[in-house]
Image (cartoon, rainbow, N blue to C red; front, side, top):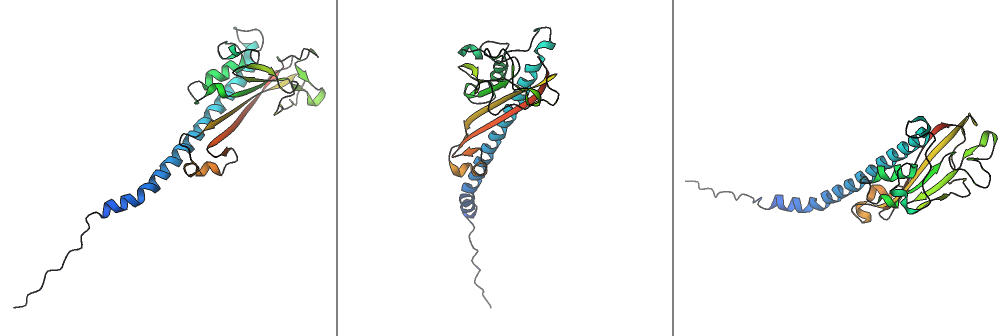
Length: 211
């Protein structure tokens, strides 16, 4: 009689646990990077929409039953975030609930409504380089931006002085949801971000009838 000894089966108990333990750090790294990248694009979308709606509002004031003239850029005091009827107020309202710190947004509004008291004009320079005056606004109020010149400066409308190019610039600095360079690998390749902090600027331009 030929008796064969049974072959020992190799135990696979614990193999899945080891594989999971090895892959879990990589999966967590991937998920954290995706979350931060998604939040980055969420901020971009909200800033883009806010700048566009604010610019549209800045040129529509004189064409609505509510107002006979274009809205002002904002107020000189901190009531800018609670006083409706200004372009800056429209921006802060759009971003409330959309970004983490809407009052940390800096807004520049370039429109011919910003009349320079020294010159009595809502535009600066003449001819083909005529530009709308700019005001810089924070949650603390608005003031003339670099002598109303603006930075970045608005463009010149090709059909000035019949039309003036209105512009709204929004700048926002924010931190990613999950801190740490290893969780922000795609963002580190962008010039907009540095060590988990990103600064994004968005502007929109629309034509308004000249003053």
